[in-house]
Length: 223
Image (cartoon, rainbow, N blue to C red; front, side):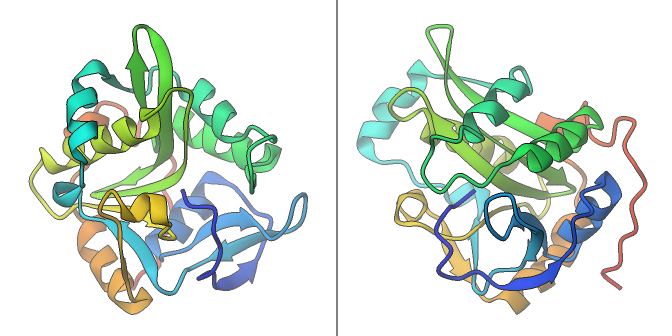
């Protein structure tokens, strides 16, 4: 979700972006991202890791005032969301055709989801990522309207917090923007320990209707 790589740790190079490979990678704390534009796919595990506890999402006073204007939807405009996130004109753009195709397939299989903020019938902002058990691994977010991406993140956090069980939003790297919304950093070892519990949590209601629909059976090698 973040685009500042001051804490990146490259663990491997492998261009396999099949659903099974991606899902197994996330279950072990890895995620794919090109090393450079058009280059090999790197598999990353940041140290430290940027995370958000859903119940602790922060809203400024101004955000609290405008939030009721937004309508939060799930998976009603996934292709629009990933298209906007992959816009090559965006600074530090990294979502190329390979990444876009891979996560679109994961969406078709019921693992990847978009959370959207709508304003007066317009897509104001959104984010997408993988939902595996109690983990939401955020990949990217965008806004067309002021506060659109913030509204989507708050909608995601509230949806996850509404369910019982251990749940966590992984944002990969912390940025100043994300820190203002309550994102913190934890050591990679602690993140991997937490992952064991989070992945065993049932999917949240906000995604449950599509969870694992026609999905692959992936190799979970967490041991």
